[in-house]
Length: 116
Image (cartoon, rainbow, N blue to C red; front, side, top):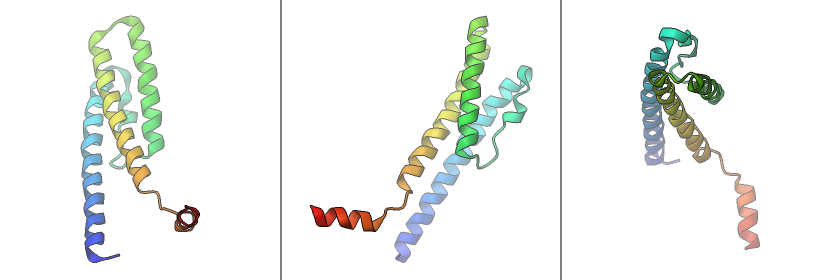
């Protein structure tokens, strides 16, 4: 790997890390707004949440939204929707990043190239 490729890789990781921190901060802000009534402080995300944590939080927010939808509290629903939107943005970013960082099996790719 050349020095330029290394620098580019470092820059990409830095940008992803900064975007993650920004989205985590926004998601935690919305979760804190939910916390007033529902005790959602246990759902505050760490600085570098795992994909599983995000998926679980998304599912819990979905269920909470369904529950609140029945009662019709519009303000509470908006807080839940905004929190879930932030979590879903993080999920999308994680999934995109995972899809572009999967190592390529050169043996498989070379075999396909020879067949073509």
